[in-house]
Image (cartoon, rainbow, N blue to C red; front, side):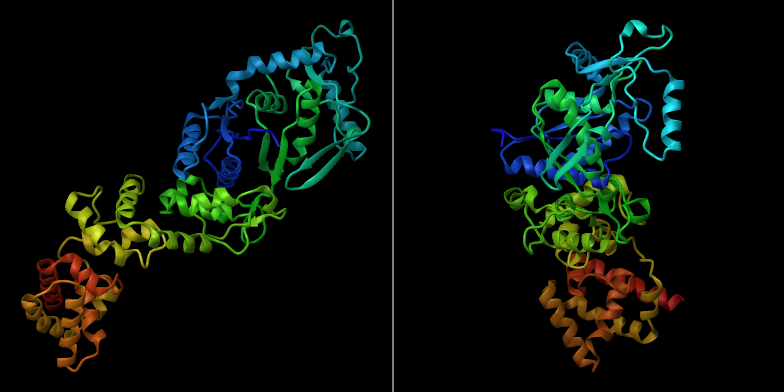
Length: 478
């Protein structure tokens, strides 16, 4: 193993940071941190038509939100085009690459012949050993690798195991196009070498590139990095993860109310295992992670499991931190109907105070915001259908009877309020629910909410009395 492990995450900025890309970045980050190494970031922006600044920003923001900080400056591949061209020409000078003057018509003929014979298209090497003096003047050459024609190319993959290709099945691939721009294969190899990358961890859809890139490394006389190709993420039905499965960008998961620590924990368990452990702190992930525990079979994305894990993280997160997390996503998701677009000091204090009751039921930050409706709802509260159904004439009579007891209640805190409501129910020969349900409907406008006595404590005596009065008036008028 090299003295210092260097990994890299190298996304193409043609869209958002896909959830599969986020897992690849996480695996690279964990592997580097586990070995006290470095993870680098390279933006592969050579596709100038599809690469956008918005996509670059989304990738960078997504990585930072997940807590996957990279080492050193970000490398932009397009800016290194001159270096790639120089490297290709150095291979020509060394006799390990050559200019190819095959015309488009000749290439089309090779393609048609391969199609008729039922085999993949392969360049036939016609310019491999010809003198460039024979070249037609109207054709601008490409630069092709002079690949080995005998033997085999083997990659000892750290996840897939040894993988072998017969060299006769691999043709002389293009390194430099006729306009002087590098191909992906050349640019990746030169960049990884120049960046000092020792270990390449990427999706197994790149496995077929491994043989080609290994040949390029050897043509340069460079050490070949160790490689690990991790299986892709599939949907619950076993098909490749797609938009119909909910394959969203990392920014969408943030907007859906997931905590970065929870998403990070969920992603690390997609294809990697550590005994029966499901929940990991960041340090536990770093300490435990290694590639020998990455499976060869595709992992299946399970939204229900992610939600449950997120709910666990919400319950274990500090109340002030959760309030801050809600504040951070409000500008992005927009406030629910009736909610403030930003929290003032009073609302922030009430939200922190209510958080112990709110977070017991919520699986996402969005659910937290919605469950906090009773805190920011304006009077008179709009009752949902189930709440209105609870406020029968008998229930309104109960509210009218308990209201004076609320006014004279000495302690306005959970245990005192519970004792007061229970005592009232016993004196009225009623079940607790016959009192609690109408109170809940009047105080929150809904049939379900956090614990009633938590709600009453957070709202305070005056607000509770005002909402009970509103409910009585509303039902009397209907």
